[in-house]
Length: 466
Image (cartoon, rainbow, N blue to C red; front, side, top):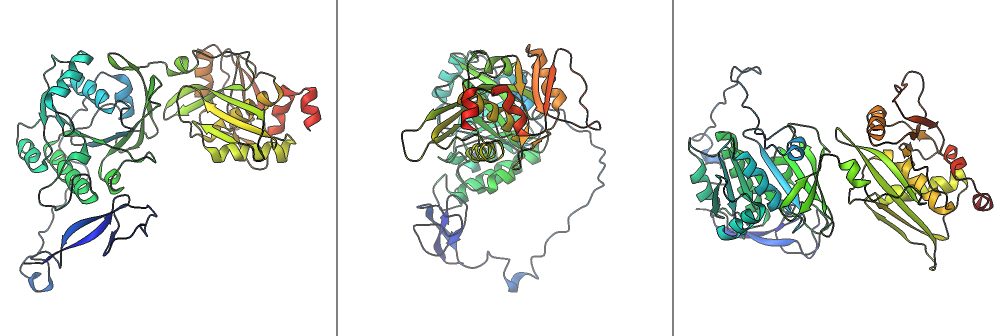
């Protein structure tokens, strides 16, 4: 029998070391090494002397086109959730849902499984809360009368024994994967080995019994799901629930999906009765907009397959410090620095003695490069005091030489803008080959250089700065 020893495993990346150190040499994380027990030597039956006695079994290959019909997806009836997962949950799939503490993960999933219970057998296993606590939440959400199997357990062996039979539920929620443990591993729940092994066992049963399993995952202070990164590779779909805790909007974003588009978003609004889906997020994001205010521009963005209009707000104010501040919420700080540099180098507009604050209203995080032109328009508007035309939407990517580059699906963006009553669009210039079809009610101002944006904000103040 192999002797038992210990090694130290990084809880951020899963790297293993023979002795403890303050810093992980693999990922650079501090104080992330935790001692875990391990058996010395290979497991019985895999060493050189036993290989001849324990040969692997030959696997059976099958044709790519099978005769078995695909099982239908499970539709919850909550359109925003079904959109993000690609049109419903696929039987036998594994979905990982992450988010900050208190953001509403358990609330959303309890609402989803209670809707799914109308057409399928569902089970909700909580490792963090007692059964009575889950029932209290169900009563608050008004779903206490739904036929949903409920349990409070953390042992994966017990859960596996309850699921590995023909009468298994169609949909299973595990809240959360960090509380699960396998008794054959000598380490605490939440460690890399426990999370990886627990998820592997639950996913194996899900594939075997065609159970659509949803795993809830905690996130670290950096915003990534706690535990090994391999966990995100093991599952089929990874969803993040985003939003400020003091804000009523919640964004469910798909960052990985084997059965649908990635970067798809679903918008929810937190109310007393739970998370309510928002069918027209553009109208909601622009509900408090004032068109006659300088420093604001409406960006026509694209999140997955959905066009979304949001307001980009900028504030340029004289700095009282030697080094001006650059604060960004909802956008990439590196791209803001790039847009400021291009405005100074290619357009002669200086921001060096000013603090710059940028915000994407509504709590949405924009990652699309097409927001560059809207950010530049908001910055110029705040600097000069001249508002961007209230009826205009702006989109386009900015290059380092000052050119404005084309973006994907401009027609879809213009249709969404026309639906909400906008009559003008500032967008990249296109050639005859990539000509955009006319959109009724939308006039277009096409520019191919960032300097083409300056005439909209031409004032005596701007002339002096140049």
